[in-house]
Image (cartoon, rainbow, N blue to C red):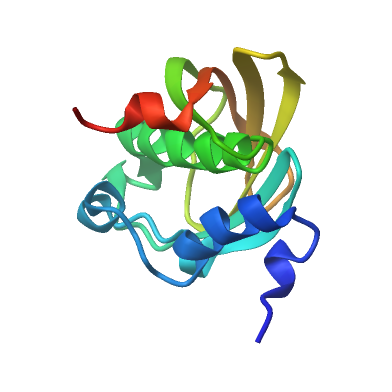
Length: 156
């Protein structure tokens, strides 16, 4: 059965993203509690949409999500977004991640949307926004990705 969240992706990208959406998660995701298999609502080439159900378990204070969690989940979101824009045989690593928090992230369904804004042969630039249940922007994420041949990331 095909997953409609990846229907618009090219085959090589679809396989990569489906791994995450079926729950085959790397240790970092499992250890941090990041669940793209539950939270990704839509993907496309250069685009992802997450809905994170903030239940308060990541709060550092009354109704305030820990900024480190915002950064950690954001790195996952922008990385999945970058993965949708890779050609076959390409891989990437994060060069820079900037997190700009405008207002506290409180409880409720938080929408996190990311777009590849620019892509060259060796660099990708991705932006993401965190939106509160009332639609206000809570955070803006800026990320640069180094694009390299996938084999260069294999351990020697």
